[in-house]
Length: 170
Image 1: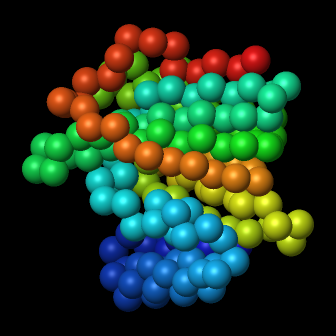
Image 2: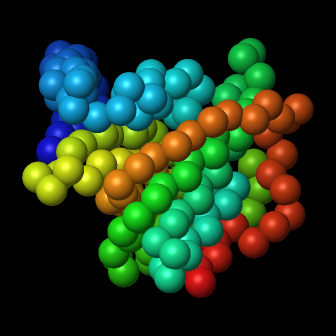
């Protein structure tokens, strides 16, 4: 259930209601989705995360997404998301590719991560939505359906991104 954001950035009560609705929805998933998937939603420092890498293997139905997260006060880390039996629509592949192509460095990028949204499809598939905010561009949602999601973090010394291809599709 994609929960619409308030349209007025200055309306604090609408934003509080929006955040409460997100929390209630995610709490309603407790016991129906793996606990580690819910823990991902409480991870600190993901806002402003930058896409380091996205590797989608259609034949094997796997997707790996790496995001550079954190900030100066808490330090930096890579959030490594691994999706199994992953489904990524052509539209979502295009959006992920656009984000990857416009992310050149920690200072030169057009999108950064705003938040995650977790859902459960009627067929039991996990759905993770990543909302990226764009500078002078519309916000971008990437929706990933999968049978299993794994994630871990790897500490990084700074926000600098490695010089690698950001998006790969096989």
